[in-house]
Amino acid sequence: MPSEPRQNHLLIIEDDKGRREFNLDAPVYSIGRDPRCDIRLVSQFVSRRHATLVQLPKEDGSYYYRIVDGNLRGQASANGLLINGRKLQTHDLQDADEVVFGPQVRAIYYLLKREAVQTVPPDEFDITLISPGMVGDPEDLGDDELD
Image (tube, rainbow, N blue to C red):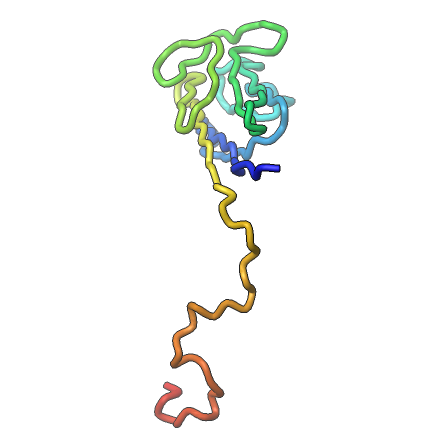
């Protein structure tokens, strides 16, 4: 079984409340002003159900997120989505994409890849970072070396 690269999907929201980070791993996220939204946007300029994130599978076993304007029933938001400067209904998110929901309300998506290169667990007794001068009994040192 091939070891797939581990991915962290991160959404950073900036709105009237400040800056918040969301690690994405669920299949669906609702985004908007409604307090019941999974990712709540604090601004009077965004819709109650402004957008939806949907997790979709890739052929290699990993997944990606598609952002859709409005809710999953097809009801679009009032202001729409501005993604990387273009007004779009849907978009498959790529690393460092910027989504603008309204004035002073935006999200930046990051796809952080951690390659699963290391197959051997790290040796917990590895002392390669200890210099030879640090090894030994402190009592063996003279008083002038302890300062």
